[in-house]
Length: 436
Ligand code: RM4
Ligand code: MN
Ligand code: MN
Image 1 (cartoon, rainbow, N blue to C red):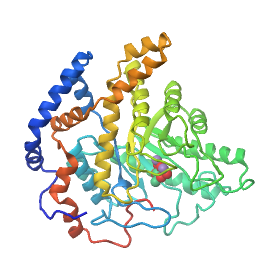
Image 2 (tube, rainbow, N blue to C red):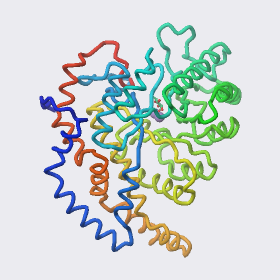
Image 3 (tube, rainbow, N blue to C red):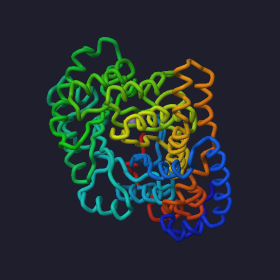
Image 4 (tube, helix red, strand yellow):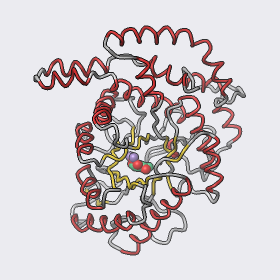
């Protein structure tokens, strides 16, 4: 890819308006045509656009750096070198897409001595802080005890105490930033049969997690994230939604389950898991990404957009049945190894919003009728009709109404932001960017 050398600020309202100008008329006519088609289906397009314009998915701070695999990482140009620069990149994504109003931090990757400056920088960019993520899946330099054989479930109480203290620290930092949740994902598990006592390891988890739970402020949630395998290859302690739900119900009402789309066995019906967690009143959050084989962390909607739609179909169904229930925390969780992370995050947020918009188009009264009369074909057709509707004009109109770009990726490329970063942010060997 060649980089455009230009000095435009992609966050500047005038720059965005100038990019939108040549696209405006075509959008208006596409939007009008879609509005007419939807009207024939009894749907008022402006209502859908309004809901879409209010939707937001958080950006993972670790997503703006280039990711890698366990084989290699190929750093990108102008990567953010600290949390402030990560926020700057998030601000660009938000300015152009207007669908990413918050950032999810990972600690200690995003550690800074000046939390009030960080909060101020975020406020200036119109960004808030979503859930904070703790990290006890790797050792940090200078850390007294190692997590090689686990953290919250380690056999040594001193290691568990160190991991608990880190999580309590994360809560304190999150409080100062205005976060309302701690996401707990641990890599703990066994590589070989016999390595762990499977029952005892889970009991140690519950004991440690309850000490973290006790440190939660009254208006906070603990989001428990499960993952089937990796880094442990035989028996991960919090491996599936059943264990996650068991932990949440044992810990108390502030504990909820977080579903990362990449953390399941192949062919698992994720929308069914979503439905069960909604039933239990314990669906606390989402990490969106896409995958073909495992925890691939590919761009949301890039492999299986239909699954994303089916997940949103459950979420919208729940939202409409119980409008007072707080929605789960929506976050992206991806690793961008071969693309410009800003571009991947922009298109991923757009794909998440697309699935939401498609789910809003499902005629739920009609669907309920077909379900009741056991008309399997027409029930599934009702979903398909919503999924196959091109909601692109609604998404673009919502962005435009919010002051964003009709075509965010084109505007971003025209701005030359990445080339500007390449000059301003010379590569540093100690960069904490990305997942390796
Ligand atoms: C894990 C999991 C967590 C994320 C880390 C970096 O696989 O998805 O949410 O914090 O990766
Ligand atoms: Mn995740
Ligand atoms: Mn993951």
